[in-house]
Image 1 (tube, rainbow, N blue to C red):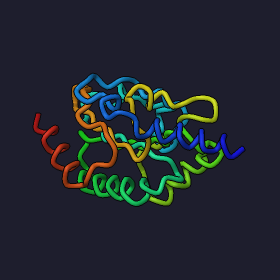
Image 2: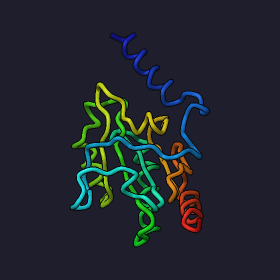
Image 3: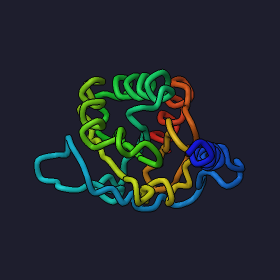
Image 4: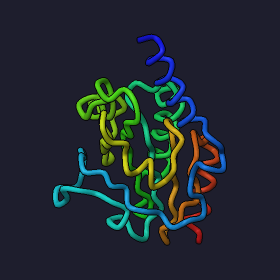
Length: 179
């Protein structure tokens, strides 16, 4: 049993810390998210994907409810960015719990309670389970959580990496709004 735990931990470590060149799709067209489980959607929506936010700068935050880095860095940065760009209709914020481990803990219910804890009024999705890695993680070649993706108005990925500092996120988004 111990060897199974070590093998599982090593697999997760390799997935999350794999070669930097294998992570992200910076500069490429942003693909579909493939998320089907959502909360906080507009009343007329049952699903959400990038095509629904066409012409907007999109800040897409990937998290897991049990992720310490998500709570220490990712959510605080997300909240600061939401507050900074509040009232700007040309910037959209979306958070998705991307489950690649701990599916019995990182459940949809935990995603919704985490969103409530941070008073997120933005769309919040849940993707992945014990059998399936999230399409969003595969499509964007993310390296774990917290993971931030910023997409420009034309649908091109302009940031795709682990945590971004608030000032860097603000500067990037402000620049994208001027393009």
